[in-house]
Length: 296
Image 1 (tube, rainbow, N blue to C red):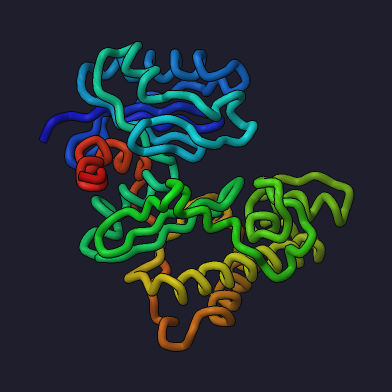
Image 2: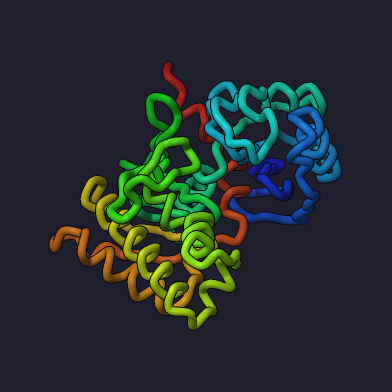
């Protein structure tokens, strides 16, 4: 199988590697010039990819991506002026090769489905709680993109306990507002006046920290249980830093799942992802798989 150059453009770093049939080789990284604008970000990405030889490029990018044009339809302020950026066109102009682009969490799900722990399953749900909460959905052996290419925004579902709390999307009451890493840190600071990182909160014996972790775990467990009720996936794959939030959080997470998931579906496996670089793998696979999703 031909070599594809995978690129993962995130808010803090850009990674690139050669990918052959799901195997990642020679990973290079560089800090993302996130506040310097799209041209500088694309310059950095192209510079990294150019060190890995020639070949088509598959990009995993933060933001809501049109996976057929390679443009960013929506993005947060994490990457300055990223919304509207023609990632595919910009990289093609710099490198002279074909470029395909997919959203980062959709890429992650696609990689796990094709080459990771989801391999052999016809349906799969990925939920990745980190700074925010992203997701990817595989149904009937295909990545669900959605009419607006926004499928997988699982963090933007209403959640008990989040009423009135602002979400990063601009609305209120969503799961991401209390169950994400950002939500955990904000809740603790709001109750104590002290800012701690999510990792510090997870290690704290402070009753307030334990309560915040409990509410976050319950919210994420209920979210996943509800999603299992809707999609009935063969398995749920988890990723992201919040999944390491410790025993208090983990106990609440399992309770939340049991409270929300219908009895018939409670045996749905909930497992950790198996690939260290799933987004790079999924982005590389999109180079050849994209044709199977285009309207003929």
